[in-house]
Length: 283
Image (spheres, rainbow, N blue to C red):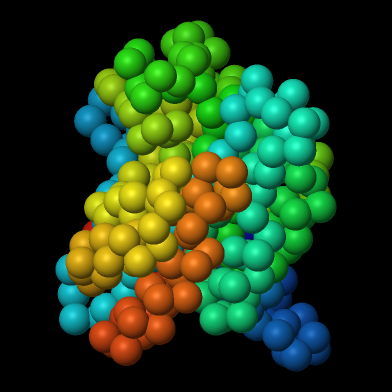
């Protein structure tokens, strides 16, 4: 793990900074000066996560702090279940490149919760999203099968397979060329229980839910979707939407109302990582 100069100094507990860096094997201040960069400037930052819950359970994040800093995170689920390959072959579109282009046009940062199966089906799009600094890619499982029973009719993942399903998604992102998938996980359907939180504790992810439901799934009225979002957003909100043409055909159109109106109200769009970083108890 890469650490900053300040962390070196604390970890090594020596009086002189140069000695601390040398003792820990890090670059000396003289080397940093020669390269024109500080050690902390070249160290990649680690994405913020929440500390584990009671008994080490996977922590769950719902929204950021309700402060005067009016931030809001738009999140988009790129859903495709493991058994929907034949439907894609038949011409059904589980992607929505126009929606991504609209976010780029508005310069709206966003977090895309992607299934591994979606990344396999659309590797070029997965890579483009993952390499665009405007976005961050997070994990929505490989299969999009439910981690509990009775979850919107989804097939279920057995407890022994839950961790593997999440790790398989990360492997699919890497194969598609996503350089840095975030340590955030969204349960398919948003369904979870103590058993699921326990099963994923070793993966080291923060489970990300939401406090605003857009209602865009299978919606046909873009104005109704926009109204539902605008009525629900508060400072620190996480909005759940979808990035699939077949399952959420009006989302892109709804964004054309949502984004200007929230900006008019003084909201600033951020990624989930920024909201988690603003939350007490993050690490």
